[in-house]
Amino acid sequence: MDIRLEELKGKDVGVRESCGLGKFEGNHNCTFAKALYDAVLEGGTDDEVGDVQDFGWYGKVDLGDLNIKESGNPVAGAIVHEDSSGFFTYSTYPRKDEFEQDWNEIIAEAQEYYDEGDD
Image 1 (tube, one colour):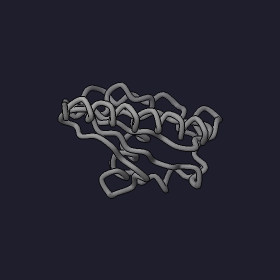
Image 2 (tube, rainbow, N blue to C red; image 1 turned 90 degrees about the vertical axis):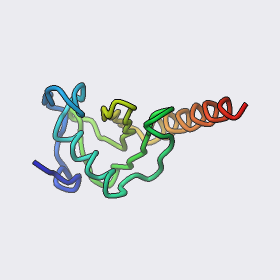
Image 3 (cartoon, helix red, strand yellow; image 1 turned 180 degrees about the vertical axis):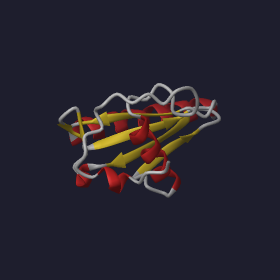
C-alpha cells in the first residue's frame, strides 16, 4: 500500500498504527512512516546529511504546507532517519523553530563525527 504525503493533507496521523516487525517498526504511525519514506525516495527532503553505513542518514522534510496534524497538533516538519540495519524512523515537530534547532544539532553532530574521522 503506497501512500503519498499529499494524500495525508489535512489529516491527523496521531492514531497509533503498528508497523509490525521490519523496516518501519517502532514508528508511531505506519502509514505516515511509509509516506515519508516514499517521499524521501522521490527526493522529497529539504536537506540531508550522513550515510547509513556510518553516522546514519538523516533527512529534513518540511510539512508546513500540508496541514498534517498529530493528535490535533500541527506538524511543521519531520526529521527522518535510516540506520545501518535499514530501520527507518521519524520525529515530528509542531513548531518550525524546534524543527530547525534539532536539524541544526544533527548537522553539527555529523560535522563533528566526520571531522573526527579525518584525524
